[in-house]
Length: 253
Ligand code: NAD
Image 1 (tube, rainbow, N blue to C red):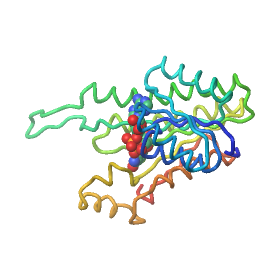
Image 2: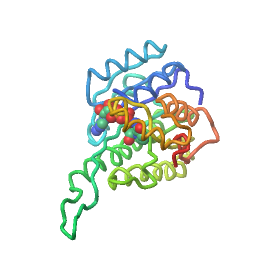
Image 3: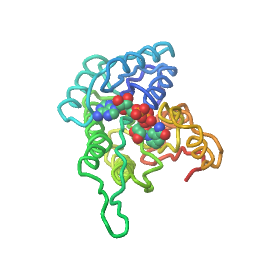
Image 4: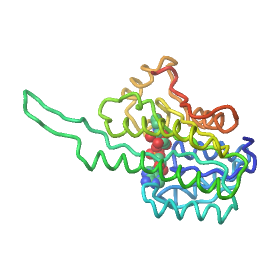
């Protein structure tokens, strides 16, 4: 798919990787529907997309809420007239060990709230947006559609992240399911699993802690949002790619 003039929804676009993906796509002339929970963050992303040379609109929606996601995709199609792509990027963490014990005494357990919050956004949110996007692509009769889910290196099992690892493994699996189910409508899919990426969260870390993360990467440097954006764009632009997950991790795995 040639990205110029294509209508692409990016969730979690208010900051971090989502903003990086949206602005990179804007630089290729795409028309962005930027989705997040906070208007100010979205306004900054829209400005960044416009500065990069693309068109962008802001949409407030919680990807975990069915009615909000349905309204979101109705609004996007009402505003842009069509839909060519979706990047399922919104995500949260609520880390905790499954159980913590010392000398046979249980100290803590991962709470159901911790589990459910991450499953709601990172797994159900991806399902809801993927479902509505595919439905709109078919209804509006686009020639070709693309859906990319942002997974994580944690999909292989990450300490203290039962909830997050389960969801990130799940979104890579959904990309495989959708590749099979949606090929008949000429909708391709894929996933990108970032390793350790240089976002605000990492910039705010203590230098020693940050250095430990860097030293664990064989390439001895953190990934940048643009590495993830370029991987997502590769999936969009490569018409024989569907269903697979790209590990973009500097060799970490
Ligand atoms: P971030 O926290 O900087 O940004 C995530 C954005 O998603 C925020 O703007 C947030 O408001 C939005 N969001 C959260 N819940 C939402 C909801 N219910 N509805 C709509 N928007 C919501 O995170 P990031 O580092 O940019 O990560 C983006 C994606 O990449 C996430 O899925 C994350 O799991 C994944 N990822 C990040 C890294 C990394 O190193 N940064 C590594 C692997 C995977």
